[in-house]
Image 1 (tube, one colour):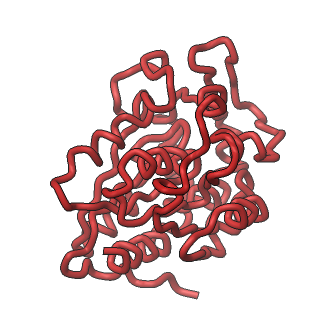
Image 2 (image 1 turned 180 degrees about the vertical axis):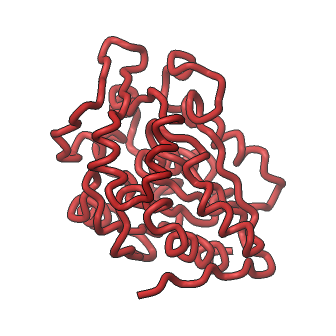
Length: 261
């Protein structure tokens, strides 16, 4: 099946903010960003703290809110009355949830692309701690670092995240990947996200069926625990859907931006 065309931005289409996952940066959205902008969409792909080209070191972002600050600042800076579609990939789903909790009036929709999808009943760390991924292969962790750190190993990336992605994008990741954190202890100490704020955001989940890390059954288990407006599916996407299925993913994002204006 051919990928859907990326819909041209409708009049009044919502701004799109793309949020990367652990160890990555705004760079990982370059294919999707190019497709969306070519169709007339307004797109930003910020680097979160200590990620991508951001100059800070991980120790400069000791809390999850510190890490997510660039996204929060982007929403805070939107003109009065303007809203954005937030698109979170992988751990980026947690940053999208925090942004929706902090600025519900500025979020037109929250899109989760094979991403952590927290609910409003459990501690914020719950969906991370329930992920049944036991073989991190050559990834390196340091529990004594503040915050506890993780560096996703090259073989883990190649076999678990990038197995269907173009080899040049995997090579790019080896030049740009950085040490990061899942901030589990910090998130565990926070109250659940609220029904009135994050819970009220209109949510769309994009299931990536060939993901070997956030496997499809777990994606669907999170969806069953947190109501969403729509579930969309990409049959041939690995964890890095922006590389393995960029046109199809961009098509879904464009459609959401036009629909949830």
